[in-house]
Image (cartoon, rainbow, N blue to C red):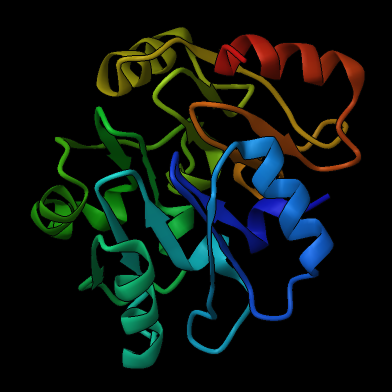
Length: 210
């Protein structure tokens, strides 16, 4: 169910942890309509979701990522790849982005310029319903976005304006509000955790316009 903790994707490729089953890789590639796959660890772990952020322009990784891991990502993705200059390791839980904008936790306010340079988008700092784990609470593609279910109307409008997509409040995996843990999404398709309910699937389809 927590597939978003282990896998990241954009519109062109999937990033998978070392040892990920080839049969699952084939299925994910088919579902997400991508042809390229990158196998890598971040800081020696399989926790790619919390340890990295990416859109179609660039990739940001935790400062504890190794040079070898960064080189693999650079070579395979052909994108700019940099460590985020912050003491926080789980940067995927702090940053949400698509190709139109990025929303970051107040904890990342001092590295907004670096985030902007790597991802090629304007960066806005905000929390969601009082939580600072912004990246865990928003999942966005270039076609739509989902947000923590208790986000206010004003927050939803702000997120929509920044990311330039429709935003829907919803849950994942039968009521889990921290969406990034159970969603892998790009502009073509969405893959979610296996505990996600029928009504949640309907909301997800509407949120991401797929």
